Length: 362
Image (cartoon, one colour):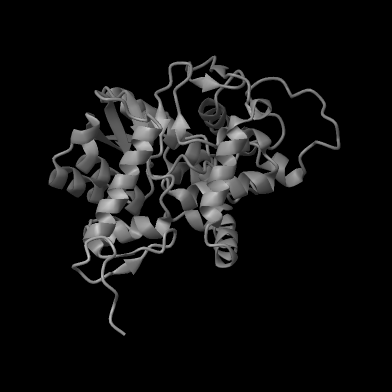
């Protein structure tokens, strides 16, 4: 049976049927519609004001590649300028190839690129060094915990280095739905409340962040990259198989088999939760060591690094008392989190990295 005509241009043959709308579109019309939807997301949410200098978190993966390409197409209409900021986590046999893809993109699109490295920012620590340090800790997913927190800080530092006023990351609807599921399974009401919305407006001197692709499904991100013939790095991080996110991803696929709109439903539920006044966390303070946003005496990055320096990585990621301040007051046992939630108090980074580790606070 021949493919139907494109329902938009009525000239070319349809190459796909959009999961959400059921529209049959050719590749060119799909890409045009995709870009228009991202433009609407940015403008309706007032995410990037005219004149903004935007740091695009570039990992070389499909999501950040699509985000950079779409924003480059939309930049004249939005009135913004773009800077690519890539983070070198220090993962041997993986990050070098991903950074090579970012450099090719920067050259092809004539966009300035800045690379910031964990080793330079965090006292010589790389992710490979963190992995070796935590290998015997009994917490196999510690790498993703550290990487997400440090990557978020590194991206902030890189954005400031290039004079950016805003940060954008490439998280799509599937990524955010996985994060909602992870926080729900952990019983982490605080992160559920913080994870809604299209980004943060910037508090305490932090740069505003947003996720222009948050309402786009992973499938459509891949299709856009295919039809635009984008060059991106597609290998999974060597530490990702250990991450809890993989279980959330599997659960999401099962939910989508029964309810195709499951990912977007979860995203919208998180948005509604974030709007509830009772769910909003108290405003953050400043880290006593580095001045970054923190809910305790030390921010997550400083607490984790402190634990590494002291040789106690398990404490730094939430096993027992950490270095962020005094223990919390006693809680009603009926509302206390279970052991799994307590052990994951620091969370896996989640939305802070392209490896999809799990705090939705980007």
